[in-house]
Length: 280
Image (cartoon, rainbow, N blue to C red):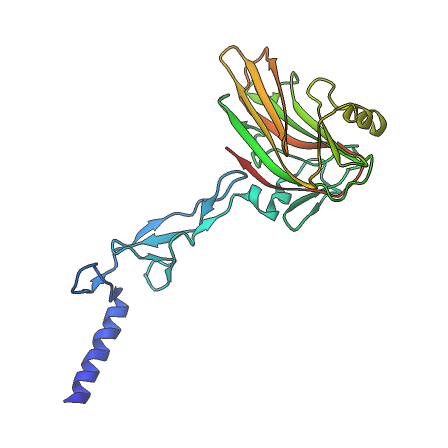
């Protein structure tokens, strides 16, 4: 009789596995079994600023699975994939003027592309070169490791905007937000280059940055562009580098429809690593 019972139990288990019936608590005292009723959640690709997820399945019992048969149980949120801008893979998103730059341990190590006399740039992974934006207050932030800079070395960053012309996105060519950082004997100097712009000349750009009286000491800093545009096309911005904040305004004559690029426009020393790009 014992052998018969054992054989019957084995047969039940085999059938249960074959038909997707597994022991699963319903939250009650009986801890009953049921057939998993799985709902598929499609995979979503991560973007420059937004995380994604791998494909997974959920059951009403509160469990999660990586497969459609309910065999491989997974932990909640194990399907989440990080936004590309927060990983070292962000290097692959810097596709413009980037032939000399390299992938770092945290992001992109920015080097001057001597063929074009400029540093690497990204379109935020958007194929149409436009990161859609309605003008509401937005902050684009990232971190810079400046340890490669020595005295009188500098790096310049630039955020540009798009307008729509003849059904295509194009640089507004009116305003771009820029800042420059230079290493000094005492630390670092940071300068708002909104008005003077970039000359792409090591001597004159360094001289412009060194005019600033805004300083900081940290080798690794968080930097951000906070910007909004009102209904009259007046832009208000704040550029923050570490604890230093620089503010300004400008009025566009065209309608701004999005961000175009983030560009390490120019430098006189390779090796600054940029990473952990976020948008809020």
